[in-house]
Figure (cartoon, rainbow, N blue to C red):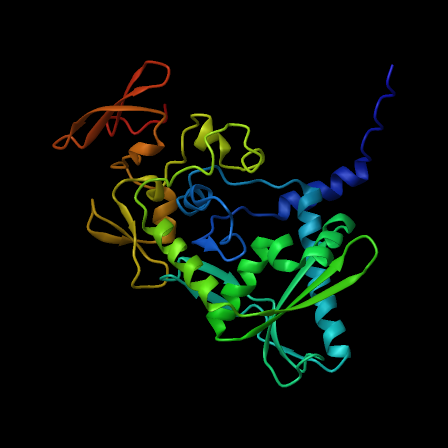
Length: 311
């Protein structure tokens, strides 16, 4: 018989619980620059439309996030110790009507390889396996999400170079790579993101195979491939539209008004789910009653707008 695993220490459980108690979950206002170069259009659309439940992280994960913040401070100190001037930490990145959003780790002058060139700074950490891949293949190939983040950051701030600095969690090895701004890459990526943001329905899946490797650990798999119901918020409603003329603004056609962030999360009684998000076939529409009727995958009939209750 296999030995029973050792129980977790009560002290450790209490520490993790303290992290969880202090944590708060929040919806992103837009598409994160750190996720913008993800391979699946539908994944980005679901995140933008708040289709899936908010993630709740375990205490160990939350502590790991805090360790990352500590490591960023350490890397800044390392750069300053060799005479690099670091500034602009947490400066905001706002693109595509401010629906693509993020913050930079900093900017710098005095980088050893090119001291007179202003650089964007992007700090990351990795385990030994990931570090070996980064060293072998470079940021663009090994870490496409990081590469997209660096490119969009340079684009947002009008910079031509980025210092991508990675520390290994296992042995404190450092890796530095100077990335060159690629305007063609950025224009293609921004055009793709604008298309996703303005899409009224989910884009095509990256694969129809339910066991496709890029879908296995995607948090949107239930709503994408397993007929789960989406969250009821303004962003999953047919009446809402992301506007391009402001700071990530949204509007509601039903009430002919802008909708605030808090209003978007709460929704309203006239919510009508985007039909492509309903796990069923649309069979009827009553414009006067403002209802849409579906035959669900289990054969039941459901009328959206009649009760606005989750099925």
